[in-house]
Image 1 (spheres, rainbow, N blue to C red):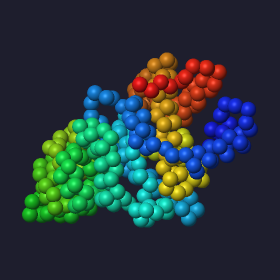
Image 2: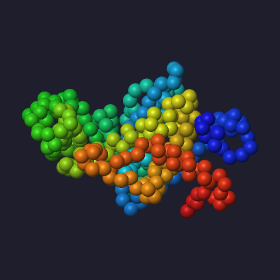
Image 3: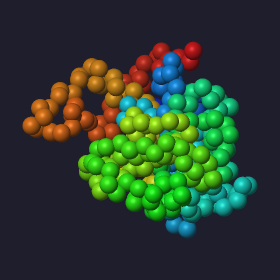
Image 4: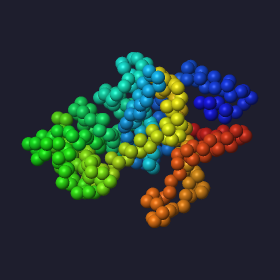
Length: 321
């Protein structure tokens, strides 16, 4: 926040600007629905989105900061849309440790559907934390497409599948080979089961879905990693969320909104830079990563440079249609 205070236009000292920012977190309301709609403007409007659900958490002294976030995959870096500060009770302000529960996940999805509609959901992706009988049952009842990873030590029904655990089931699957087992009963639901053994790991990547699956299903699930990239940019690789020293449900929720907008602006600045000065492709002998990539910090710096150019500009910067 100190950096923001130093770049606010006007004659006030940065210390005064810093106190103004503090008052925003204390007194001002942030419309989360409008924020979500603003963030969604970067996403394609002619196709459904792959959604990614995950948590990020850290501790500030004795205070637990635990955010459940629903984002949309976008060019390798997910866009946060809706989030919830997880508390020890429904009306409290004290952050909780540990996983989200079924009701908290449902509430996040219901907020998304009320804003954008089910037709915007191509697939919901989530990691092994987001499993359970009630959760899967609700997703199937609402007919929300999902691809969710399951634990490899999950016990199977040996009457259906000739294996004790998921890991046993994929023990003889070859590297980079997709293997689907059709419908099977897991978590008291009829789910499609399939997976792949990566060439880089001995551990199979196994997912369940309420839709028939093939190798493309695994490619869709892997978009889930984009939310991890987003968390990295919001925290240690960009905006240093954890260093804000802010805690409490309302303040953290507001800060997440401001950071998400800044995050989107940085991505747009990075895209502008790429169009203006394209990054040259590296030869295969030089690098396995094609094309070469700039770190997110560069995009963030470009965004700051663009904002500083607006200070002398009398015309409005943004236009809302």
